[in-house]
Image: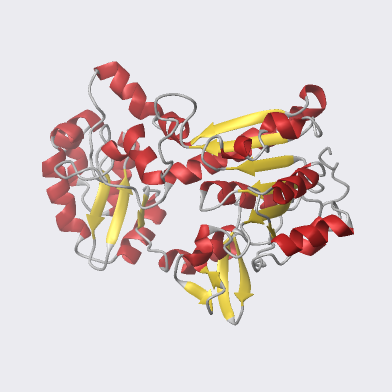
Length: 399
């Protein structure tokens, strides 16, 4: 199947693309959720009677049926119960994949092959299949390690640069290994879709470890240039000042001064024009040399009033700074309220806000379907199109 050509302004970019989603937890479901936002049909394969692991990770939001974790990553998908480790289940998946454009899986390496569902086997009957494997590592010394986000963060170097200078390494608040791999999977899949007519099917491999190593970017560059590990700096920047958090009267304020021009504007905004004339702070190099002294001066100023007052002053003078929102504040933010990044849905009787892909097109629409599937809700409807009635009955009796 090929990507459907846009026919009007309401066509989604991946309209007509079917994705068989053999993933659970975060990296794979995040990838397939993005593909669904772009218009693809997502058929989620779940273990009979068990489902995705995240169906059992509290808090629950609809009795015991739906959890917030599962709902946040699996809206708009079709849930099909299949035990792919059995002959009947594997045959059903193979029949389903023959109608699909994409398969995503994030099982432990070798699992799909053991079930006869590896890329080589499925490509025999669907040579245009784009088969994406999200793993912790590619083949090598670590290929058998459990691919948990924290393990990959530790090995990739990203955790070593997170935390205060005099404290231990810290795991970032976001599961960046999982999210990074999911985004690279979408990039790989959409790239392969774009060239599939010329190049045919592909086996796309996305390692979490490699993804996070690639995110080191200029941190890696600094290491190669100096021969030293990139330091932990907390909220400070290694090469810019003042670039850190400051505590205001009612919360934290992030200040990101990246040039001497921005520094001049900050001095005016905080009513301290005298600091512009101080040779200790005249250039970024000088401010770095006197970083501690500068921080003490600014702390005394920033703590005198509220984050809202400072945010308004910074906006007035073009200073890069903002209050630190928590995960309640951000969804009450005036900008987010006007941006098409969220959609409201009711799960059972509980109202929920779901975050959608922040991608917009001038002539295309993204989807905002966040209806949460019950386990196996679409099994019969989906499989009846690819299995004979007798094969479907046999499969249902065996699960």
